[in-house]
Amino acid sequence: MYGRLHVLLQPYERAAACIDQLGRIHGRKIVDILAEQGIVPGIKVDKGLVPLAGSNDESWCQGLDELAAREAAYYQQGARFAKWRTVVSIPNGPSELAVKEAAWALARYPAISQDNGLVPIVEPEILLDGEHGIDRTFEVAEKVWAETFFAMAENNVMFEGILLKPSMVTPGAEAKDRATPEQVA
Image (cartoon, rainbow, N blue to C red; front, side, top):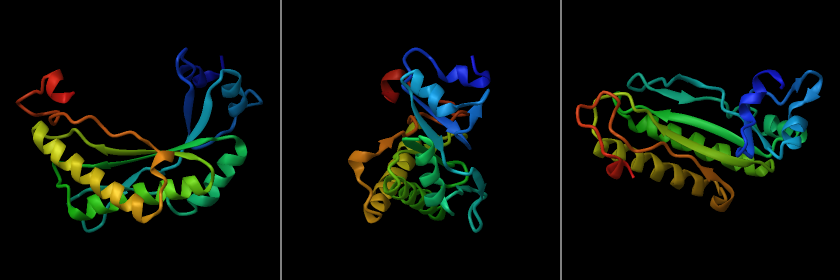
C-alpha cells in the first residue's frame, strides 16, 4: 500500500496516531490517505523521556516547549487528536517529584491540545518493571491518576473532551505471585 502506513489500516481501526509528522507518502498527504479509509488522523506530541534531575534515577517526558505552536500546525495539517505518554517507575520509587512532574505534564498537554482544537489522549503509564505485587501497582496507579486529575482540574481541562488511556494494573513483570484474569479485571 504506502510503505509502513498499511499496518495502521486494519479493518476496525478508525484512528491512527502518526509519529513526529503528518507528511507525505509517495507524494500524497498521509491525512488524505487516512481520510479515504474513514480514519481520523492524530499525532504523537510528546518528545520522549529524559532523566529527571533530583529523582531516584527516574524519567520525565519532554515536549511542552512550543507545544501550542506545533499543535496549531498539526491541526492545520489535518490532525484531530493528539497523544502524550509519560511513565512512572515503581522499582525506583516513584518519588513525589516523578509523580508530580508526570501529572503536571499530563495536565498541561490536554489544556494546550484543547485550546488548539485537538482531542487529547492522556496516557499515564505505570511501568511493569519490578517484583512488586498487584496491590503496589494499584497504589501507585491510584496516586498517579489522582494527581493527574487534580492537575487537569487546575489547568481547566474539559474532562468530557479527553480520552484516558491508563495502563493495566498487574503485578510487576518479575513478581513471583501472578494475578488471575479475575484479579486484573
